[in-house]
Structure formats: C-alpha cells, structure tokens
Length: 308
Image: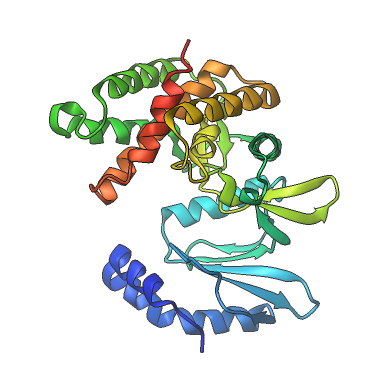
C-alpha cells in the first residue's frame, strides 16, 4: 500500500473533480506497475506534494531515481518535452516520459539540498545565473509550449475585469506594468525555451559532475526571451521579513549580479521582473482574493524604483 497524504488527495479532487478522484483510485496500481516495469524499490513520497505524486526510488543496480506521476494535462506534457530538449544540461535527466499516462522517471539529484540553503544571497544569485545559462535552448520552430507573451495577455485580461482596471493593486504600478509590457513585447529578442519556474526551491545541489554542482528540477517549459527567466527568482524565497528599503537594496544587488553573469540588458531584467511579479499577483488574486499577493506587489514596487 502506498501513502497518499489527505491534503494532497483533497487538492487533486479540487483541481480535477471526478477525474482527480479516478486518478487517485488508480494511483496505487500505477505505482505498482512502474515499480515492476523498472524494478524499483519505492519509498514514501516527498513532503509537500502539490500537483503531482512524487516519490524517491532505487533501481536494482542502486541507481537513485524519482518517480513522478500526475493527472495527464498540458503542463505535464510541456514538462516532459522541455526535459527532453534540455537533455540533462543543467537539469535532472529525464529517463522516461509518457505524457498520455502522466508518468515521468527522473534522475534523482543528490545530495539535493535546495539553493535556499545558501545563505549568502549574492552567491545564491550567481549560482542561479550559472544554472540558467546551461539550460536555455533556442525555441523549436514548431512547439506547444506556453509563451510569456500569453502570460502577459492573461494578466491584462485579469486586470481589465477588476474594478477601475486595478482592483486591489496600486494604480501607478499597474500603469507602469502596462507600459513596460507593451515595450517588452514590441521588439522581443530571440525566443528561447526557458525553465519557466526558475527559483531557489527548484535548484538542487548535485554530485553528478564536479564541474556542475547545482541542477534545476521541475521545469514548466515556457518560451520567451532570456530575461523572462529571472522573474520567479527575484520573488523568492520568502522576502516578507525585509523592509521596503531592505527589499530595494536586495533586489538591486540581485539585478546587478544577474546583469553581469547573464550579459543581458539591466533594464530588461528589471522590466520583466516587474511584469512577472504582476502576472504572479494576478494568479494569487485568482486563487484567493484575501491579500496573498501583497509580498509580490512589494517586490514589484521595489523593482520599479530601479527603472531609469
């Protein structure tokens, strides 16, 4: 028998209704099937499951792997395809992927400490920049990956139906976001396949290669210019303990480091950081209108002070 945490099961039912319950009912048999197929010794699932059932396992030859199972959907399909294109460069290797059945078998990144364990923020930012650069690939000519331009469109649609076009968000900031988004999308640079959810919790320490000591996990697979990738990194990890002034200093230093390491225009990094923060705030508003977006808006306002 496998352990299915109650909170995870309820989350899957909330997300997928009857389809989610049917998937949960079939999950034990699917784990058994995968264990037999690859001769896996599976362990208890990782803590804090969200959208997928993820558990560590070991193959008969001692190889440490991760079995990731989810309700088949577009985002899981994009993850599998992105992992295939990245092909283990700066990211956990995909060993097997079946989008139609929602099955992924992955390299287990070991020792697997999150980038959050690096307490020197400047060093953590430099590490993140190095991993990003290993990942990025030119976007395929034909693909079904979500585009950052589409995320901007969704944000605009959300803002348009809010009272006065701003809802709970600062009016000046919303105006700034609209102007920045217009300019960013007017003449985009080369479109790249990006991780799409690159932050401290998705970068783990590895002993795979002495020359590459950190790897990414859990890509969304999104297409946009390179500067789009920094948005999620700038918002993480929890920045609520910082005062407004401290947040300005922290984010200014991160932008300086990213500009130097990524060799990208500073103002585009700042602009995408602000736009992505508003995209994220709109997501939070859509999920729960109780104010959970406040820390994200604080980051956006801090970044807005860096606009020349």
